[in-house]
Every structure is written in structure tokens, then in C-alpha cells.
Image (cartoon, rainbow, N blue to C red; front, side, top):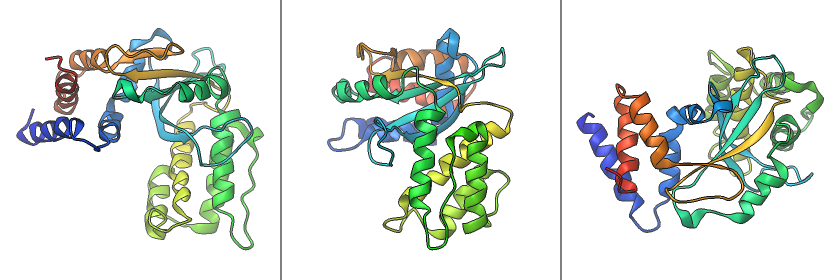
Amino acid sequence: MTEQMDKISELVVDDYFTPNIKAEVILDTLLKPYIGDLGELFEDARGAYFVTKEMSIPRGDKWGSKGPKVDYVLAKDDPAGKAGTVFLVELKTTKSSMDKGQAKIYKDYCEEKKFGERLGRQLLEILKNNFRTKGFSLKINPAWGDKAPEYVFNQIMERFGPAEGIDRTAKARNLISKENWTQISGYRSRKYLYTLGQLADYIGKGHTIWNSTMKVVYLVPPGADTGEFRNVSLTHFARNLRERRAGEPYAQMLVNIIAKIYREE
């Protein structure tokens, strides 16, 4: 690794052992470029793509941005052309953060449910609620299926845009930045436009997701077990990454961080 990556590795490990530092947030960000590699550890998930992060999970018919969020959303098309699979990945960096209540929410409202009926609908409802202004209200219809992200995204851009960008993800990010929605109280949930852009771009590449069945996977510390869903230890993930990404310095930095945190040299 480079000297700079060695320094990043040292700082992340130091923060993990520092009181009151939310190291899970740091690792969550650093893992993002390679979280798709997690799919290679399961036969049914091989070839899964990273789609987005931090999607809100509805409980029953209570739609809104409050409540639990899933760390990563991976998706895979069905080779036979039928509805594919969405893998919801929950990251845990300490055994003490394992939450039976959260696992029950995943089981009751996500596992084996359709993505569009739960997380997709939740996203549309959040956007409808947060982009309501005088003389304008989003029209949403979950029955639009895979066209829903595109249709809703276009409505928002027609009202609040235009925004520069080569794809919808970039346009969403630039509009959010231009309007300063990340800073203004009462408007921060408009950042869900970025999630919508990522979904629309993923579908626009010829993929499907709306009718895909959701499955939950936990990425956990060594020895942790949810008892409900498939678990992958962070150290097992890191060993796999060490081999698959042997020539990539960033990946090896991640491997080094995980090894030092969990004392696996």
C-alpha cells in the first residue's frame, strides 16, 4: 500500500478503539466500492450489483423516512428473465450492536417480500411528502413498476431542475447541492432524490428491480450470528477480498484495516 493508505488504515483502526467514535459509519463508507464482492460468497448472489445505500424500511403501512435504514442494496437479475433478487446487506462492526428488534423488522417487512411493494413504495412516499410545494404535488403509482423511478425523477426535474450531469445520479447530486438541501432544516429528506436517481440509472441499464424478491444478509464481526439470516464475518469477507483483489491497493487497505481491528494478521 502507499504511505497515504497506510495512514488512512492507521487512523480508521485508531478510531475503532476510540470511545464515542462511530467507527461503523467510517467502515460503511470505505466498504462501499467492494460491497458487491459479498455476492460472490453465495451461489444465488453471484454477479449482484451495488445499487444504493441507506434505503428506508417501512413497518406495515406506515410510510415515511423515520425508522430503520438498510446499509446496502445489491441486486441481481434472474437469468431466465423473471423477477430477480435484491440483497439487503446490514453491516455490524461490533457484537453489541446486534439488534433482535431490527432483525425482526427485516423478517417481518423485508425478507421474501417484493422490493417495489416495500422499499420502492417507501421511497416514493417519502419523495411525495418532501417535494410537496404550493401548486405542485408528485404523482406516484407503485404499479408503474420499473418505470416508477424514471417517471417520478422526471417530475421532480421538471419542477425543480434543470441540473447538470451525465446520468440521473449526477443530476440528483448536483440539484441537491445547488439547492443546498443537505443544510436546510426540513429539506434534508430531499436527499432521497439521490437514491431515486441511482435506482433509475440501474434500471436504465437494462436491469429490473421492482418485482424482485428481497433477501437479507448480515456482514458481522467474527463469531456473531443473527440466528435469522445468512451471516458473513468481516474477516471472511476480507480474506476473500485479499485474494480476489490482490492487485488493488485500496482493497488491500480494507483488508489490512479489518485484520487489525479483529486481530487477524
